[in-house]
Image (tube, rainbow, N blue to C red):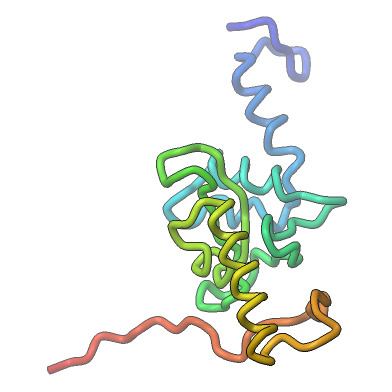
Length: 152
C-alpha cells in the first residue's frame, strides 16, 4: 500500500490517481470512453485535450461534439491520431473530418484545406464572404450507413 488515503483507509496511490484522472471528464462522455477500439485512457486523453469550458469540441473543426450521436452519424465523435496509429498523441474530431484527414499529417491536412479553398474560390464554388463559420447545428445531409450483407 502506498501513502494515499481515501476515507481514512490506506489505498494504492495509483487507484487515487485513476479516480482523479476521470473526474474532469463530463459524465455523458464516460460511457463513450468504454466503446470502440480505443477504450479507456486513450479516449480520456483525447477528450481532455478537446475539452473547452465544459464542452468537447472537434480538434480541427471546433464543432461541439455529442457522444450520444449514432455511430453512423457524420458528426459522431472519433479518435484522431495526430502522429500515427500507434502514437498516444490523440484528440477527438467528428467522424467526417477525421475521415477527410485520413492518413495525412496535421500540416498536410491544413495544406490540403488551403489548396481546396483556393481551387474552390477560383472555380466559383467558394464565394464571398469567404472564411465564414458554419451554422452551429450544421451537419451534412448524408450520413454513414452500415452496409447490410446481402444473402445469396
